[in-house]
Length: 190
Figure 1 (cartoon, rainbow, N blue to C red):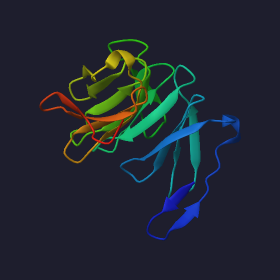
Figure 2 (cartoon, rainbow, N blue to C red):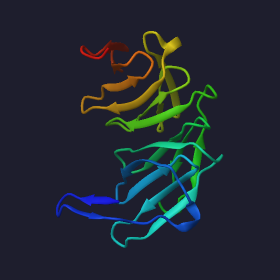
Figure 3 (cartoon, one colour):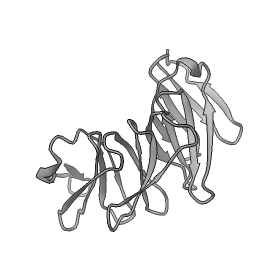
Protein backbone atom coordinates (compact mmCIF):
# COMPACT_ATOMS: atom_id res chain seq x y z
CA UNK A 1 0.00 0.00 0.00
CA UNK A 2 1.27 3.51 -0.79
CA UNK A 3 -0.19 6.84 0.32
CA UNK A 4 0.37 9.63 -2.15
CA UNK A 5 0.79 12.80 -0.08
CA UNK A 6 -0.08 15.21 -2.90
CA UNK A 7 -3.51 13.64 -3.52
CA UNK A 8 -3.96 11.73 -0.23
CA UNK A 9 -4.89 8.69 -2.32
CA UNK A 10 -4.15 5.26 -0.95
CA UNK A 11 -3.27 2.61 -3.51
CA UNK A 12 -2.79 -1.10 -2.88
CA UNK A 13 -0.07 -2.94 -4.81
CA UNK A 14 -0.46 -6.73 -4.38
CA UNK A 15 2.69 -8.77 -3.97
CA UNK A 16 3.48 -11.49 -6.51
CA UNK A 17 1.73 -14.75 -5.55
CA UNK A 18 4.98 -16.72 -5.24
CA UNK A 19 6.06 -14.62 -2.24
CA UNK A 20 3.39 -16.14 0.01
CA UNK A 21 3.41 -14.65 3.48
CA UNK A 22 6.38 -12.28 3.30
CA UNK A 23 6.10 -10.75 6.79
CA UNK A 24 6.61 -7.22 5.46
CA UNK A 25 8.74 -4.87 7.51
CA UNK A 26 10.18 -1.54 6.43
CA UNK A 27 9.78 0.53 3.23
CA UNK A 28 12.04 3.20 1.74
CA UNK A 29 11.90 5.44 -1.32
CA UNK A 30 14.81 5.30 -3.76
CA UNK A 31 16.30 8.14 -5.77
CA UNK A 32 13.77 7.55 -8.57
CA UNK A 33 10.71 7.71 -6.29
CA UNK A 34 10.11 3.95 -6.26
CA UNK A 35 9.22 2.16 -3.04
CA UNK A 36 11.46 -0.69 -1.83
CA UNK A 37 10.50 -3.10 0.95
CA UNK A 38 11.72 -6.06 2.95
CA UNK A 39 9.91 -9.17 4.13
CA UNK A 40 11.37 -11.05 7.08
CA UNK A 41 10.55 -14.38 5.45
CA UNK A 42 13.42 -13.76 3.02
CA UNK A 43 12.19 -11.25 0.44
CA UNK A 44 13.01 -7.78 -0.80
CA UNK A 45 11.14 -5.95 -3.52
CA UNK A 46 10.19 -2.82 -5.37
CA UNK A 47 7.00 -1.02 -6.29
CA UNK A 48 7.47 1.03 -9.46
CA UNK A 49 5.05 3.83 -8.64
CA UNK A 50 4.83 5.02 -12.26
CA UNK A 51 3.83 1.67 -13.75
CA UNK A 52 2.37 -0.04 -10.67
CA UNK A 53 4.56 -3.10 -11.29
CA UNK A 54 5.67 -4.96 -8.17
CA UNK A 55 8.82 -7.09 -8.27
CA UNK A 56 10.02 -9.29 -5.42
CA UNK A 57 13.24 -11.24 -5.14
CA UNK A 58 14.43 -13.88 -2.69
CA UNK A 59 17.01 -12.30 -0.41
CA UNK A 60 20.44 -13.89 0.00
CA UNK A 61 20.76 -16.49 2.76
CA UNK A 62 16.99 -16.85 3.22
CA UNK A 63 14.98 -15.44 6.12
CA UNK A 64 15.78 -12.23 7.92
CA UNK A 65 15.44 -9.25 5.55
CA UNK A 66 14.45 -6.47 7.91
CA UNK A 67 15.48 -2.78 8.06
CA UNK A 68 15.95 -0.83 4.83
CA UNK A 69 17.15 2.67 3.95
CA UNK A 70 18.17 4.93 1.09
CA UNK A 71 21.46 6.83 0.98
CA UNK A 72 21.66 10.43 -0.33
CA UNK A 73 22.85 9.13 -3.72
CA UNK A 74 19.49 7.29 -4.06
CA UNK A 75 20.81 3.76 -3.49
CA UNK A 76 18.99 1.19 -1.37
CA UNK A 77 20.49 -0.90 1.44
CA UNK A 78 18.93 -3.40 3.85
CA UNK A 79 19.99 -5.54 6.79
CA UNK A 80 19.19 -9.14 7.65
CA UNK A 81 18.29 -9.77 11.27
CA UNK A 82 18.43 -13.58 11.06
CA UNK A 83 21.60 -13.74 8.96
CA UNK A 84 23.44 -10.66 10.22
CA UNK A 85 24.54 -8.95 7.01
CA UNK A 86 24.21 -5.65 5.18
CA UNK A 87 23.00 -5.80 1.58
CA UNK A 88 23.15 -3.27 -1.24
CA UNK A 89 20.38 -3.71 -3.80
CA UNK A 90 21.04 -3.17 -7.49
CA UNK A 91 18.08 -0.93 -8.32
CA UNK A 92 17.87 -2.20 -11.91
CA UNK A 93 18.04 -5.96 -11.31
CA UNK A 94 17.10 -6.48 -7.64
CA UNK A 95 20.36 -8.42 -7.12
CA UNK A 96 22.00 -7.96 -3.73
CA UNK A 97 25.65 -7.50 -2.88
CA UNK A 98 26.18 -8.93 0.62
CA UNK A 99 28.56 -7.06 2.90
CA UNK A 100 29.56 -9.10 5.94
CA UNK A 101 30.04 -7.19 9.21
CA UNK A 102 33.37 -7.65 11.03
CA UNK A 103 31.64 -9.61 13.81
CA UNK A 104 29.26 -12.47 12.91
CA UNK A 105 25.78 -13.04 14.36
CA UNK A 106 25.21 -9.52 15.67
CA UNK A 107 21.57 -9.51 14.59
CA UNK A 108 21.63 -6.26 12.60
CA UNK A 109 18.02 -5.21 12.85
CA UNK A 110 17.53 -1.72 11.45
CA UNK A 111 19.61 0.59 9.25
CA UNK A 112 19.54 4.32 8.51
CA UNK A 113 21.75 6.55 6.38
CA UNK A 114 23.29 9.80 7.54
CA UNK A 115 23.69 12.84 5.29
CA UNK A 116 27.06 11.62 3.98
CA UNK A 117 25.88 8.10 3.11
CA UNK A 118 27.33 6.32 6.15
CA UNK A 119 24.98 3.52 7.20
CA UNK A 120 24.11 3.17 10.89
CA UNK A 121 22.76 -0.13 12.22
CA UNK A 122 21.30 -1.41 15.47
CA UNK A 123 22.67 -4.76 16.63
CA UNK A 124 19.95 -6.73 18.44
CA UNK A 125 22.25 -9.50 19.75
CA UNK A 126 25.16 -7.35 20.99
CA UNK A 127 23.74 -4.02 22.14
CA UNK A 128 26.04 -2.10 19.86
CA UNK A 129 25.58 0.46 17.11
CA UNK A 130 27.52 -0.34 13.94
CA UNK A 131 28.42 1.98 11.08
CA UNK A 132 29.56 1.19 7.57
CA UNK A 133 30.89 3.78 5.14
CA UNK A 134 30.46 2.48 1.57
CA UNK A 135 33.02 4.91 0.11
CA UNK A 136 35.83 3.57 2.32
CA UNK A 137 34.37 0.12 3.14
CA UNK A 138 35.12 0.78 6.83
CA UNK A 139 33.15 -0.57 9.78
CA UNK A 140 32.99 0.86 13.30
CA UNK A 141 31.08 -0.38 16.34
CA UNK A 142 30.05 1.47 19.49
CA UNK A 143 28.71 -0.06 22.71
CA UNK A 144 25.88 1.73 24.46
CA UNK A 145 26.06 2.00 28.27
CA UNK A 146 25.11 -1.38 29.73
CA UNK A 147 25.58 -3.09 26.35
CA UNK A 148 25.91 -6.54 27.91
CA UNK A 149 22.16 -6.43 28.53
CA UNK A 150 21.10 -4.38 25.50
CA UNK A 151 18.80 -5.38 22.65
CA UNK A 152 18.83 -2.51 20.17
CA UNK A 153 15.79 -2.19 17.97
CA UNK A 154 15.12 1.01 16.03
CA UNK A 155 17.82 3.32 14.70
CA UNK A 156 17.36 6.78 13.20
CA UNK A 157 19.80 9.50 12.11
CA UNK A 158 18.58 13.08 12.43
CA UNK A 159 19.37 16.15 10.29
CA UNK A 160 22.49 16.88 12.41
CA UNK A 161 23.77 13.32 11.87
CA UNK A 162 23.13 12.36 15.50
CA UNK A 163 22.25 8.68 15.78
CA UNK A 164 19.23 7.65 17.87
CA UNK A 165 18.58 4.10 19.02
CA UNK A 166 16.04 2.33 21.23
CA UNK A 167 17.00 -0.39 23.70
CA UNK A 168 14.28 -2.91 24.57
CA UNK A 169 16.08 -4.28 27.62
CA UNK A 170 16.26 -1.04 29.63
CA UNK A 171 13.35 0.65 27.82
CA UNK A 172 15.48 3.72 27.01
CA UNK A 173 16.20 5.82 23.96
CA UNK A 174 19.83 6.82 23.44
CA UNK A 175 21.47 9.45 21.27
CA UNK A 176 25.00 8.99 19.95
CA UNK A 177 27.09 11.84 18.58
CA UNK A 178 29.63 10.42 16.08
CA UNK A 179 31.76 13.60 16.42
CA UNK A 180 32.29 13.22 20.17
CA UNK A 181 31.64 9.45 20.42
CA UNK A 182 29.35 10.16 23.39
CA UNK A 183 26.04 8.52 24.30
CA UNK A 184 23.22 10.16 26.22
CA UNK A 185 20.05 8.52 27.46
CA UNK A 186 16.98 10.62 26.88
CA UNK A 187 15.20 12.12 29.91
CA UNK A 188 11.76 10.61 30.29
CA UNK A 189 12.74 7.25 28.88
CA UNK A 190 12.88 4.69 31.67
